[in-house]
Image 1: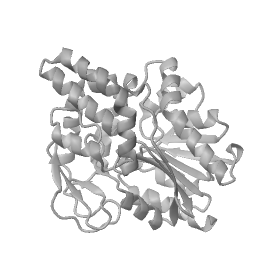
Image 2: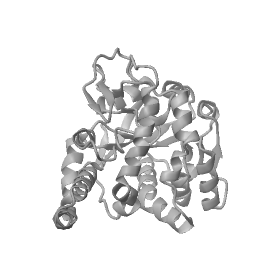
Image 3: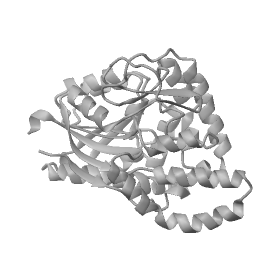
Length: 346
């Protein structure tokens, strides 16, 4: 059974939710640089995060950090390990969530419906294609953050709960949902939750790249036969990575900050196979063109060409969806959503 693929998604009002990336480029870059300082203090990475092949010299350096391409699965690894110490500082002590949390319930619902509802609908539709209705879908969402995806899935009639290490995000999400949809856990507690869950779906939306103990979490999924599907989105080695190398004064939202490694088509397949799953569905839509647009706008404004930046924007923005669609179909785009199916389901 081949992989069912879907490409692209209109940007819509995405930039309205990421105004900080434009308006506070320097502040966001300072934040990422602070995280880079912490990462550079960690031990050197010697083996691939996914397949554990031996790593050699970096392919390139971006914002002071070297990135090494795995010779076996192509996974892009930062030169330094993500450790419990790193995770504690960037996810808990520094309260990373303050850069993204909406200010009120109306904003929360808007963000949920604009960004997370399409993801939940995609999961629902793919499972229906496999003969599993929303009422039969039971989701454990790991790294649930403020509960946006959990809330979207529940609105669509699926059973869903989340777990999250940031107590501020848990408190905020539960307040916005007006019920307890996310539980606060310790940094390594997700493994135990996965081992014991009766959920038939694990979701990890923008999470796998943040798990320090990724192997242990994946092994817990492999061993729990209740889990039949894994739905995840991951950042990919992509054109966005290239643009970040070229624009050193732009906020490196993709390869910097808390993203210490990036996936490739081969490393996703390797990861799935290692836990007895296969890739069943893929949805490829990235933000590469949006990143390029942002870098160009910021650079023009830094060069005091604000009026020309507006001239450029009027002509470039209408092309962005079409340009991104070309990149998405090249399969070198910045993000991949995928659904893994346990192999014995065939």
